[in-house]
Image (cartoon, rainbow, N blue to C red; front, top):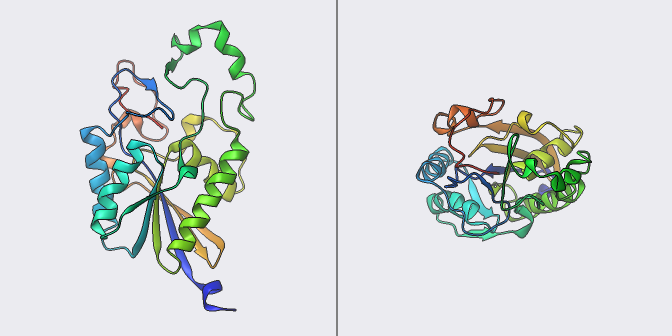
Length: 228
């Protein structure tokens, strides 16, 4: 076995911090959505958490919220933020609309057809397509940081889908049960090119509003200033 085949590389896939979004729009891939002040604090917290780690590569989705989340991590290690389109948010037909039970897009019968197939899903980018691009992005980060550690900043759904694939769970799921809160780290450990373990941590958990934490029930009137 060659040295490269035995190298341990850790790729941390981070969800971006909170976004300023007072209207509660499902912004998807729309430009112009930046981190809130709290979101910047989340990014700084994770940068502090990773400051002593052997990070040699930082890459992010092209969307502003991901780039802004990656910036303090890269700065702490004297790196530039690379961009990988494959880390982008999942496409969604409800992009630009508000979405919820009793308000927004769900009140319009014309939108109901998009909810017909939760297994694909019918409202957006196929889960399988997300797996393919995210696995490719992880592979690129692994190769760039081989023998060290990398950070990829992405979005909740693609992160959860690629983790589900690696852990051999079904891809269709209840969104409320995703373990991928704001500014969380889903860490893939590679031995050579093979993933040997997956870990999860929330360095900024105390900064995440309780109603936005994994498994929390929606709170009527609570801020909608967050997103995927």
